[in-house]
Image 1: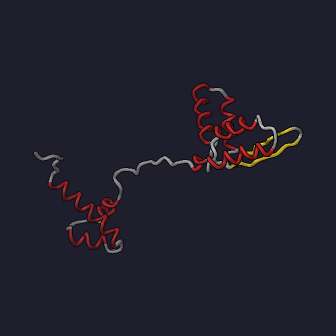
Image 2 (image 1 turned 90 degrees about the vertical axis):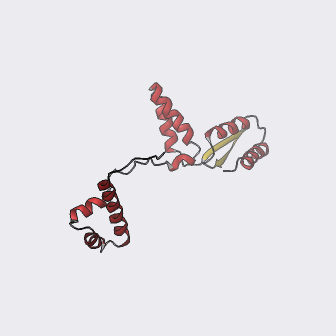
Image 3 (image 1 turned 45 degrees about the vertical axis):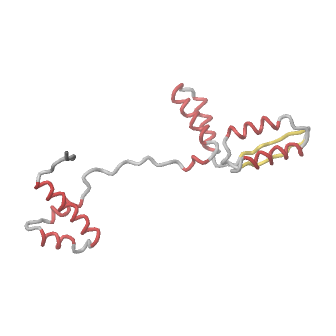
Length: 159
């Protein structure tokens, strides 16, 4: 049992002519028309250009965002989705704030007593991981303990 669609002989000749015109135009753009007109009697310049044109428009490709690799991107998308569903403007403002800071490093400030120490973390780290780290730093008694926790975090979460 044969499968496939049977084309009419005229259609097959037209398809083969079109493929040959495209192949010749790719290989020898200057001489392609003269070769085709010598091979096919009555082949006009208009038919040649018609054979070369695309029959269907190219597929629209959705470009991927380069911001995807940053840690704040997922949270920003989640807030935008929630804004689209609920219409809550506060979510849109939070998403805009994240978008403005998406490539900036995280500034983590640790206050023990009256002293304040600031750590800069890579912007590629997910927001939720940074939030977990800040929660774990709340119980620190001194800066050595905070340094150890941050170093452990950075050692296991290589970004």
